[in-house]
Image (cartoon, rainbow, N blue to C red; front, side, top):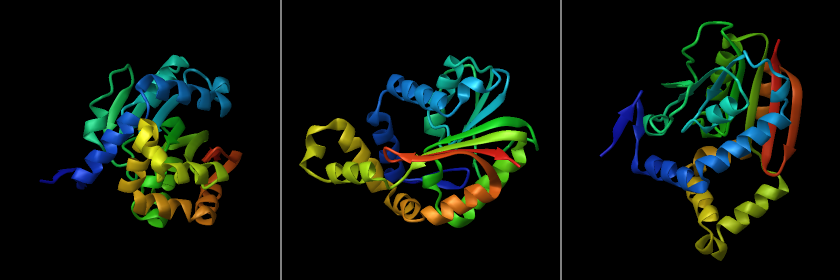
Length: 224
């Protein structure tokens, strides 16, 4: 049976993806990864009173990372009721669609996405919608931070390992391969549209940081 959350079908496939996501790394590992990543992207320089929101926040480990970095005004939003229900922390978390953000104009100083944009179903239309909403919600000079998969040589090696016998002997590789299998359409569309993605990011935000390494795109843009 299918259920629906905010108009999105929760299918057996999406449930298997969420289970694989939870198996891929422990919450403690994910929080440590996010802390390291945020520091590399300049979070140490952001005011600790900054109004920060995590889009596509999943089970909320990005919010835990922000809390450990001593940010005091933190919120999250994700479409999955199952994942949002896992969060226990001092931030506020909403179930909602990141194409239609629930916050007023100019109400946030930092918006962060860590692995959510590549799940968008209609990439060109939906990415424009998310970026437009992000720009609306950010105050002047606010930052939009995005970390997403990118088809670097490292990621190509990971793909090869994920669909080889190594998958059977590594729980982490199997979890990654399972996620790819259940998001293949959106994942491959994202990886094969680098020009579109770069052009839209730079259209909506002034570039403060743009890098590609270890299978990731790291972007920090400033609201014009």
